[in-house]
Image 1: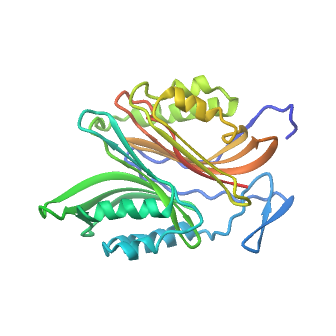
Image 2: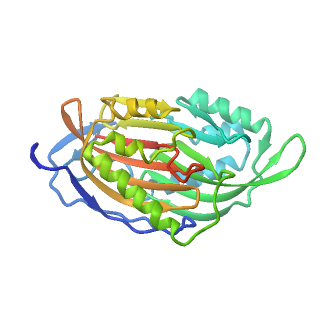
Image 3: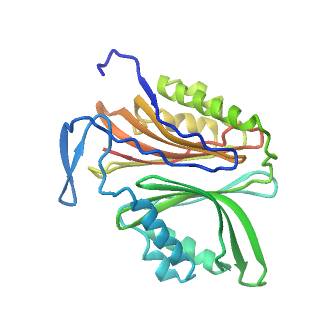
Length: 317
């Protein structure tokens, strides 16, 4: 595509129902590799269609199974051994009793260890998870689940439904995005998934057009939170921004690290009663050069039915 062409949009999707049931759709690139870089001594062939990673088709699933088994030990050292040192990025977004949001993030292994120390000091996992759905990519894994935990002080068991978006490197998990079902979640209504899918398409069209105002119009005015992490697989170029207001989100989206989207391809989407999730393959112009980026994103749904914000993790060339 030349510079004077209109940004391109391609969609390869498999619709997932309102309760989060989903199927992954893999799209293979047939374009000829144009350039080769190296990661840990291994060649990475990059082209305008795909991002080549040191992952197999089952890397995310393999790492998450191991990590899940580790968490059931409720042992700090065992759990931490399941993390990759390549990068750390965790986002935990909660709803307070007054309807406001509470955010906790980790951006390093020591921070992740402290979070687990805090958690294991008050609760433990007994097992018995009831998984509603799972959507697996080569480096990410979206899970909608009901899980159990026991308060170590009282012995009381509680159940929580939540969406988890994990991402992994071949030697362990990088982190996760966690969003438990909020109290304002509506009952299922048959036309709601269609409305949310249309909102997602409108968001994508605005993203591709570079129309930040149109994207912001789909975000809650007050109950808003975004965390965006982008990591290059070929260099130490990494960025992160957190936004608790729409003004901060605007600034983050306009930052140089986010770049200008030239091509956008949706790989999957999941529409639920309390979140929407999608994954994308993008060609983005960043600092005068074009990079291939894959993004896995969760859009929590707010009390007015709009997106709370963008919680995402991206790998790029």
